[in-house]
Length: 218
Ligand code: ATP
Image (tube, rainbow, N blue to C red):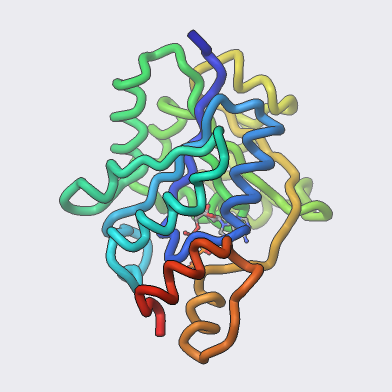
């Protein structure tokens, strides 16, 4: 049985786009992840309600992940009543997968800067590593200045220089991985659709076909 790490990419995926997919692909490769699980969030604790239903977001995420053998989609947050906390998801995954399997929570750098506002965020390090994707040229050295003090402290204590070090422990490290920046956001895609502009090539064609055939975001 493989013991390679499993990556977790949470998001509203409202809709899923190539920014999410490149993050999953590049970190999957760089970190030699066994699997990247996309976990669409239910009622997100951090933000306003998604623009379309959970079933639509799930269907689009499945379409986007379908042709990649490393990708899978995990519905657990959509099936849970109440706020979908990442802490609870990781705790469940940990009990399903056992104590030894390395888990890596994949985050964009923007999401990591907010991390200290998350429910039980410190305890997340007891359940998973945190892998932060940053853009080339991003000034990582001065980055800690933008973090709130408690996050900066965890960051400097947990930072691992070698990304593949996450294979050697089940949880607890932070790694920063450069990746190809794509200036794509779901907000911009929703705005384009509302304005009647084309978001083609910002997201998979199958997802755009789904959006059009269900009349979403218009
Ligand atoms: P919205 O515009 O609705 O806020 P979003 O496009 O930022 O949505 P989310 O579902 O909120 O997407 O993001 C989930 C995760 O994907 C976060 O960790 C976020 O940092 C990351 N992410 C989103 N867009 C990109 C992108 N273009 N490149 C890299 N990571 C991204």
